[in-house]
Amino acid sequence: LLEIVGALFIAQALGVELSLYTQLVVVLTALLASVGAAAIPSAGLVMIFIVLEAIDLTTPEAYALAGLMLSVDRPLDMFRTMVNITSDSVGAAVIAKSEGEELNY
Image (cartoon, rainbow, N blue to C red; front, side, top):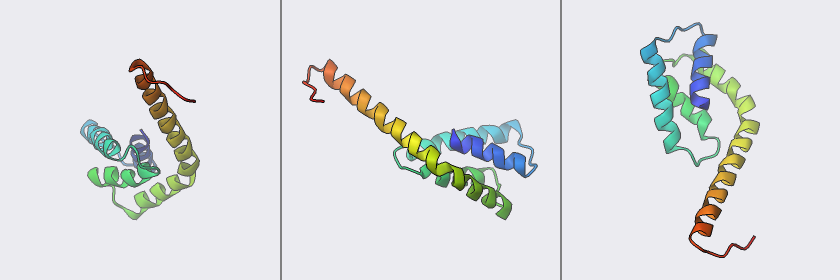
């Protein structure tokens, strides 16, 4: 989601009109990039450059706006990592309990 919103923000800030096809390219590229880097902290900001490259937004201004996103990404990344770890832990506990394993909290 970060890559999609970030790419759309950068395109809007630069005054670039994205066609429906280009928006679909943004969504598909972001989906594929996020699947590959789901478990890596702060990978979302790196993946936005892949999305920008896919829609040919490779100007210095676009990269500067991506750098601007870096300033607000750190706290958000900490919360995304916390949610990811918590949901993985809960999922593992539910599966272990359904398999009859003894859980030691």
